[in-house]
Amino acid sequence: MRQKTALIPTLREVSEAAEMVSHRLMLRAGLIRQLAAGVYTYMPLAYRVLRKVEQIVREEMDRTGAQELLLPAMHPAELWQETGRYETYGPELVKLKDRHEREFVLGPTHEEVITDLVRHFINSYKRLPMTLYQIQTKFRDERRPRSGLLRGREFIMKDAYSFHTDRESLDETYQAMYDAYVNVFTRCGLDFRAVEADAGAIGGKGTHEFMVLADSGEDTIALCNECDYAANIEMAEVVFNEPAEVTRGEQQPEKVATPKASTIEEVTKVLGVKPDQVIKSILFVADKEPVLVLVRGDHEVNEVKVKNVLNASICELADEATVRRVTGAPVGFAGPVGLKEKVKILADRAVKVMPEAVVGANEADAHLIHVVPDRDFQVDLYADLRNIQEGDVCPRCGGSIRFARGIEVGHVFKLGTRYSEVMRGTFLDKQGREQPYIMGCYGIGISRTVAAVVEQHHDENGIIWPSSIAPFQIHLIAVNMKNEDQARTAEQLYEALTQAGYEVLFDDREERAGVKFKDADLIGIPLRITVGAKVSEGLVEYKFRRSGESGELAVQEVLEQLP
Ligand code: ATP
Ligand code: MG
Ligand code: MG
Ligand code: MG
Image 1: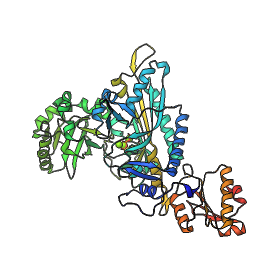
Image 2: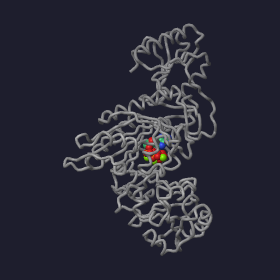
Image 3: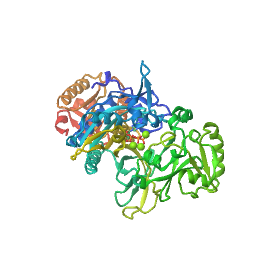
Image 4: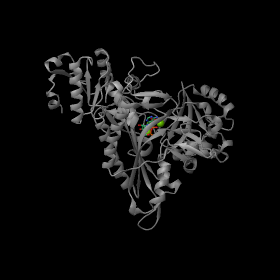
C-alpha cells in the first residue's frame, strides 16, 4: 500500500478525553475515528489488524470442529420476550421499531437467535453435539463508552454456541474452546490469564474469563504466586435499571413487586446458580457508595456496587422480623457501623421514586427487599463470593495471592438448559424422551482484543505490533522521494518485496524524514527499511520496531535476509 494515497491520518495531538493508551494511540496512528460515543470507524490499518485477529480466531474455531455462520443483527422482540430478556437485559439493549411499529432489538449477544435456529432443525440426539459460531457486529448501549475500542457501543465479537445431549459432551467442548482461546490469545501476542469468573457462585469450572494483564484494566484478578490459580475478584456488578418508571409494576402488571419476587428462586434464576449454592437474600447497605450485598446460604457476603440506587424498589424501613419473613434471609449480618442513617436517607429519597417497595433495616445494617432480580437490576458478572484479599493464602495450593488488573477479552460459559428450557429447544434422546439441549456459549471481543494488544505493546513513541497481527510486515520508507536514485530504488524494493509476498506499507510521501520516522514509530510496523542517502553506496537501513536493533544492508541482500 502506498502511503501517499492511503487513508492513514496520523495526529500529533488527541483530545484529553481519550484516557486509555490504546484509545490515544489508535486515534493518533490513524487507525480509528469516533463517529459517536462508542461508535468507531475502523480505517484501513485497523481493519487489516482486525481481519488478522479474525483469521486467527477462525482457524482456531474451525480446528475445534465449530461451523461458521452469520446470524442477523436485527432480532424480532418476540424472541427476546420468550426468554424474558426483552425486559430484563436492561438499558444496554438497543431497541427499535420498524415502519409497522413492530419491535426489534439490535443483537448484543445471540443466545435467543441461535437457540431458535437450532430448535427448528436439530431434534435428535443423533445430530448432536453441534457448535456454531459467527463473527459479527454487536450492539450494547454501554453506560460509559469512553475507552475507544475497549468498550464500544458497536463492536465486533466472535460468539460461539454449543448444543449437547449431556454434561460430559458439554465439558468436552468447553475444554476444546478453552484451549482454542489459549491459542488465539497466545497467537495475538497477549500476556493473559484464564480466570475463574464465578468460583464461588457456580461451584468452580462453570465459566472462565480470559483476562489480558494490564494496569489499565477494569477488572481486578487474584493470582497465585505459585500455582496457576486465578480468579476474578471483581464483584458482580449490579446495575439498577433505569429509568425507574420503566421498571415499575404498572408497565408490566404481571411483574408487580410482591414479597415472592425476592425469593431464593428469583435470585438463583438470575444468577444461574443451583438452589444449594443459593444466595439467600439481597441486602442493601450504604457506605461511601450505595452497595448491594449478596448473601449465600453459608453467610458469606459479597459486596456489589450499585450505580443508581434511586431506581431500585425502595420504600419505608421495615423491621428485622419483616425482613426475615419476606426474604427468608438470615438476619443480623455484620455490616459497616452507622449505615442505618445513610440507608434511611437513601430510602427517604427513594420512596419518592418507588413507593411500592420496602427497605428493611435493623440495628447493624439494612436490607433491601421487595426487589425483583432481573427486573430491577442486572447482574453483569457472577461474583467470586470468596472475598479474597491480597496476601491471602491461595485456596488451591497454599501459595500467596497477589492482585493484578485485567481486560476481559474472552469469556467461556456453561449455560446448561437456561435458554433451551424456556425456549423449548429440545431433542429426542435414545429412549425417545424429549430433553432440552445442554448449551455452552463462548465469546471473544475481536475489536477489544486489538485494543488490548495496543495496551500491552507500545512505548512512548507509539504502537509495537506483534507480527502475527501487524497491519503490514514491512514499512518501506523513501527518505527523499525527490531524489531520483532513492525514489527508484524504493520503487524497485516495493515491487520486489510485494512480489515476494510481503505486506509492505510504502511511505512514498513527500514529507520530511523526521515526519516519516515519527509516523512509522507511531504506526508500529515490525520492520522498517529506509532508503536514504546511502543508496548511492548501494545500502539501505533496517530497523526493528520492538528491539530498536538496526543496521545496514546491501539493496540486493534485502530479500535474501528477510525471514
Ligand atoms: P464487560 O464485563 O467488559 O462488560 P461482558 O462480560 O459484558 O464484558 P460478554 O457478554 O462476556 O461481555 O461478551 C463476550 C466478550 O465480548 C467479552 O469478553 C469482551 O471481550 C467483548 N465485549 C463485551 N462488551 C464489549 C464492548 N462494549 N466493547 C468491546 N468488546 C466487548
Ligand atoms: Mg458488559
Ligand atoms: Mg464481564
Ligand atoms: Mg463476560
